[in-house]
Image (cartoon, rainbow, N blue to C red; front, side, top):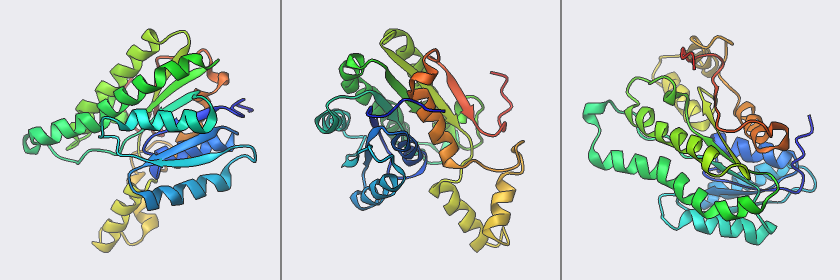
Length: 265
């Protein structure tokens, strides 16, 4: 399916690794010009080089280092995108997961940090992007959240609670910014990201798994499709939701979890 993204301009936050990088790869592969973002400049440069390898011939890919907990980061990222490409058509927001802890062990400082990193980073970036997205013929916002907003995960109180605010924001944006801008969210389950790879490898070193492959199989034990996800499967969904091919989809929050969650809605 041709997603008709050639020549469009996209900004993907927190995209130097994991699901953000996969989303940037998918957009660039469809011909969109993409700005990647991350805090670590060396890792960001490596991600930009990787995305360029898979990009369509006409796509331009650049990186802009910024810490999304900085109140000015969203504005600087949007300004860089507009400066590079002459406008902004698609915003994809992503953020790393907060620490895994149960409720009674979580401090006020950790609550505020999670809210700043997961919610305010989106608020500030969307606020800066909004006038440019309105000028586009098909402006979109896609927020990468977590399936934990549908079904709480043990010992992940920050993700369970705070990411739900991101999806509430996305639903509100789909109404307040309509009809010029569409807003959707994707809710990833378990994917083979660097974070999961590190946890599986840790299990191998600790003797919990005989091999990396057996560790992956164990992680996939409760997933109906029988495996964990490839990050590009989520990335391609993000590209689809950013494209005119999904023009009648707005205000949705789509689980991408291989059927793992038990939620009916």
